[in-house]
Image (cartoon, rainbow, N blue to C red; front, side, top):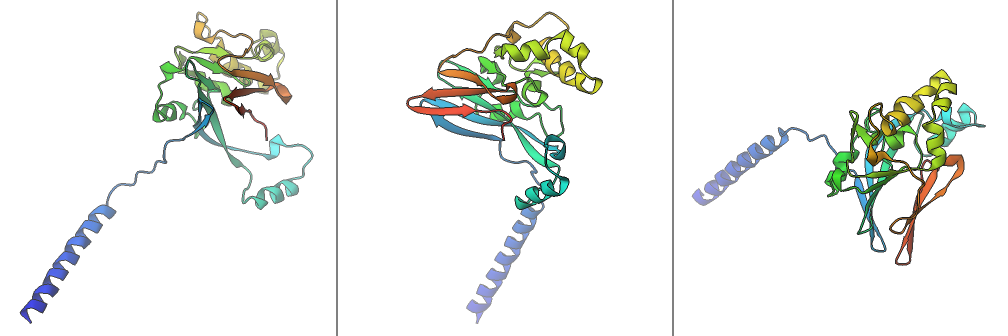
Length: 244
């Protein structure tokens, strides 16, 4: 009997100890953050890392033509969505070996839920100062706003490449003056403030025609968006912007 009573007592003591441990663990503060926002894939010997700048809620109805509100609601419901839709803002880091090239820079915190590009770049094992070149697919705010942080270059060593057609439009004082009032923000502060600051022009933000470099090239897409393509060791990869 004593042996049985001793065993029961030991079991009860262990249960109390475990209960105390579980209680202590349950009282731990919630972390409330997700895993780092990056995904890596190899294209030949090139390393391509998708970097999440964040997500933002976008009213889809205002972006689409020739569709009724009922049709839109039905189409979204098939994918368990409703308007507004949460959209991801991504950039792509391409390590060619000799060069580290970033395609687009995200919204940079200009909209709620964005502004995480640099922290995810660092989580992926890189530093902003290591980026050699930045390819801008087009000069909308969610692609160029991450070029600067509080007026300072986010990527101090990088040369920015963008198409001449985009530069001639978005950086034109004449186009800015002729734009409707509700469209002027797309010129200033977006394109002009990130690429042509009021003070001395930044050498790292010099614009030139995009050319093939380290196996990378660019082609024009509809709506004057650029597509960055790269081919290496028999494998090909294309980075498209804002194409559904």
